[in-house]
Length: 324
View: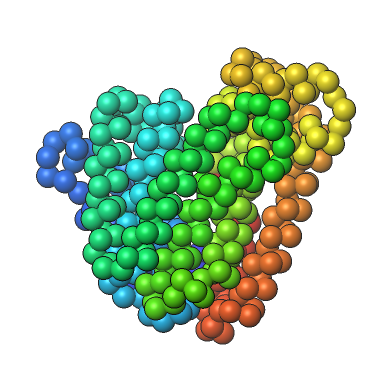
């Protein structure tokens, strides 16, 4: 059976309910706003974040209206952050589709992002659970903080793994942690019992981001971003950090500084990519994912209902092995 089918088998009806509610949230009758929301809605995606919310809720109880509204709220918050991030990064594409700012302009993109964010807050309010509202608010703060950390990460610590993982914790880690937490909270788990759920989400988010970073070293139409795109945006990710920190190559260190200050050329990026591959950066990143996956599998063995273990395991495997 296809991995995606294994993942969604226990929650297919609930996932359909989510998709209907989410699509309705991104629908508006007025001209420009309606067009921009339709553009975002058509991006689709694999729904990996709401799927995790639904699976976690089912593990600790049942998927209910609060679960659905919190999943929609979280996905809308994430969507708004991507719209705004594309403006900050001056990105022309998002996963192979034109960004909102490329289709329209920065003013429209910022305002559409604000509208989506407000719609997210509306759906979170419909959960009538203060703990979920607080978690989503903390997520919004963490996402913004992560972006600012990344923008200001230009000092000597910019080449440290510690700083890299700090950025992940405030971005992708926080996002997947929140998926797990709000799913469990919506099903009745209390904040006092949430720590192992939080850790599982952090594991998923860190693996997800490392996998995303590995994509940057390979050219693929499936991925939807060119090789070296992260470096072109001034970002040094785990594979190149490992290669830089485990060799004594002054020339590559100099290129890394040019990445951080935004003066690197496409040819220099290609040199850094080749250097990273040749000095074990990809292998190291894969090893990190495997270590985290082992911890994630232990959570599944100990804390997930037997009838959901296949779905959770397939989810973890997908995050490690995904192609885009």
